[in-house]
Image 1 (spheres, helix red, strand yellow):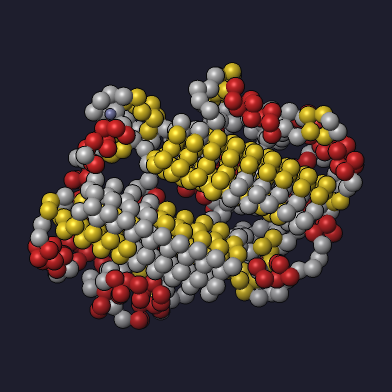
Image 2 (tube, helix red, strand yellow):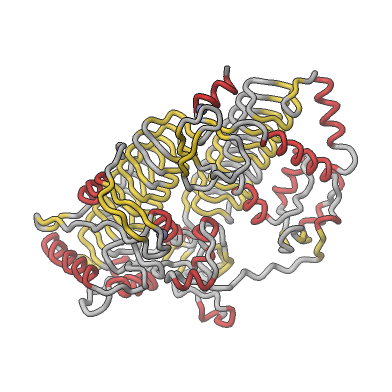
Length: 588
Ligand SMILES: [Zn+2]
Ligand SMILES: [Zn+2]
C-alpha cells in the first residue's frame, strides 16, 4: 500500500477496545475487492476488529502442531490428524470434534461428490449456522500437505522426505522438530531457515552449514552461538561479524586457540559449560547494536522479517511481495493482499484469508483455498471460481453451500445472503455476522490448539468471551518403560544407549514428559549434542522468543536520533540503530 496514507476514520475494536485507523488506501482496497453481482457492486464494509484481533481471528483457524492419533473415518485405519477423534468414540474425554476425517490418500480417492452434501440456503437461519453444519458433514483431510515421503508427523508441509514434527515447511529432508524451514537437510530444532544443512537450534538463518544455537545470520558454517553474522566460520559466541574465522566472543584467536577452546567446552560438565557460554554470549550481544528491523531489499515498506518487499506496510515474515498490508507470511509474488496469513505464490487481490495461494485471485474471507478466484467464505476449495460458503470443492463454479447453481441463480442468491448477513444482529458478540471474516466460533479448532494461542494467549474465560471455541483436552502420553529426570541424563551423548528410545524424559521446565525418536538420537550422536533437557514445545517456545513480536513502535535511532519503526519496544535492553548507523558500525 503506497504511503503516506490519509486517515479517514478511527474505529474502536469490538474485541479489545483499542482504536485503529481506516485510511483512504484501505477504503480503495475494500472497494476494489468488493464483489459485483448483476452489474451491482456490494461494498465490503470496513472491519469492526483492529488488525491484531483480525489476525488472531484468522490464526484461530490454524492448528499447526497439535497432532492426534485417531482412526480414518473411511478406512478405519490408524492415522495422525489435526482433528481429534469424533466424540462418539471417547466422549468422556471431551476431545471430540464432529467432523468426518479421512487420511490423505483415502480423502483424495473418495469418489463421493462434495456436491452431494449441498444444502439449500435457508433465509430464516443465520448463514454461519448453515455453514458450520456443512463443515461438520463434508469429510476433511487429516493433515494439510502434499508429496511427502516417510513423514507421518508433519503438517502444512510439502515435498519433504524423512521428516518428523516439521510444520509449515517445504522441500526438506531428514529434519526434526522444525518450523517454517525451506530446502533444509539434516536439521533439528530449527525455525525460519532457508537452505541450511546439518544445523541445530538455528533460527532465522540462510545458507548455513553445521551451526548450532545461532540466529539472524547468513552463510555461516561450523559455528556456535552467533547472531547477526555474515559469512563467518569457526566462530563462537559472536555478534555483528562479517567474513571472519576463528573468533571467540568477538575476539580474533588462532586456529589452535579456537580448537583448544572447543575441546575444553566439551570436557567435564558439557551441559553446564554450554549454559555458561550461552549466558556469556548473551551479555556480550546486549552491548552490541541491533538493526531496527530484519529487513533486506525493501522499498517504501514497514514491518519486520521481510526480504524483497515494495510498498508494504505492517507486514512480517514475507519475501518477494508488493502492495501488501497487515500480512503475515505473505510471500512469492503476493500482490495487493490485505490481512493475509500465509498467502502467496502469485496470489493477488486477497482480503482476510489464511492459507491462500497458487494463482488465487480476488478472494475474501477464505481458508485453505488454492488456484481459485472470486471466492467468499470457502474452506479447502481448489481450482474453483465464484463460490460462496463452500467446503472441499474441486473445479467448480457458481456453488453456494456446496450446491450447484446457474450463473443467473448464483448472482441472485449471493446478494440475498450478503444482505441477510448485514441485517443479522451480532451472533458472537463480536459483530462478526456482519459481512466480515468467519465469526470466532466457526472454526474446526479450539482456540487453545491453534497458532493464535501462541501468538496471543487467552485464558479460557477471555477466549470464550471473544466467542472462540475452547477445550481443556490434552493428548494422553503414550506408555513408556521408564521416565528419567533431565538431570539424570548423561552429559556426553556418546554414553547414551538406544534404551532411551523406550523411555521418556521429564522436561526440566514444564515437567511434561517427552520422547526421543531414533532419527533424532542419531542426529545428536553425529553432531555431539547432549540430549535435550526440555520438551520440544518448550524448546520451540524459547526459539520463538528469539523473534521480535509483530508489533511495530515509533522510536528514535539510539545513535543519530532518526525516526524508526521498530519491533524493539522501548523497554527492551537492546541498543537499536537505524539502517545507516547499523551498517556503518558493522560493514565499514
Ligand atoms: Zn482488537
Ligand atoms: Zn541512526
